[in-house]
Amino acid sequence: MIKKIALWFLKLYQNFFTLFSFGSCRYYPTCSEYAKWQIEYNSLFCALLMSALRILRCNQLFAGGIDYPKIKRKRIKTPKLLTGSFKKTDVAVWFVPTNNKNFFVIKSLRKV
Image (cartoon, rainbow, N blue to C red):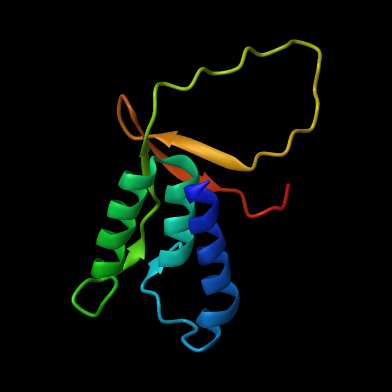
């Protein structure tokens, strides 16, 4: 419930308040999108902490660049490949492993 409220506030911020400060984020994905992904795929406390640290880094003292959110998760099982069945699948989120329990979250640009 609290995650839904936080996501609602982020959606409100992204749709209305960013109109006044377009193009001012130094990172990709933007800080608000980063916070949204953190809240969706991490615990709320960790998501708020990581988002706050990211916002503090979003200034002229840091270079910026590409900074995907990292999440902690148990190892994701890879699906078994079925021979002979080739179905088109749409991927909404990629979890790219960084080490044993950490993953980068990368969302697909196509709408699923």
